[in-house]
Length: 108
Image 1 (cartoon, rainbow, N blue to C red):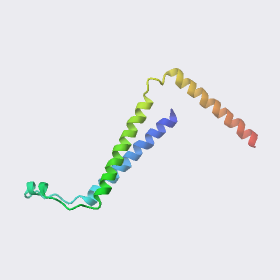
Image 2: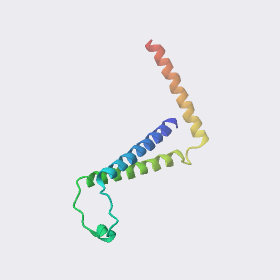
Image 3: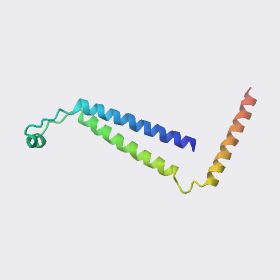
Image 4: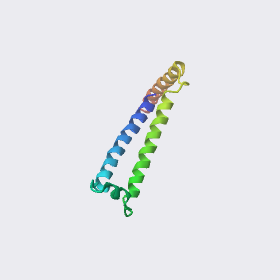
């Protein structure tokens, strides 16, 4: 469970980084809006911007990371994760820790 929470935290941190990157892309790529003749500005065909592909990539990456977060949250809050299963997982973790300690003793 601790590993799953760590994975969720890492994914949320990654999403925060990606959102900061997206803001940087907006600052670099988006031209300032002109409020004079707003209708012609909106309807005007703008030339293809080579950084548009990067902006689309960042957008897709943010959407994918958000989906990963949803999957991780669903996995954590699964109804199959009963108290008995969590206790069994904790016992297995303790057994692994004891086995690791024995292995360290053998190595030394």
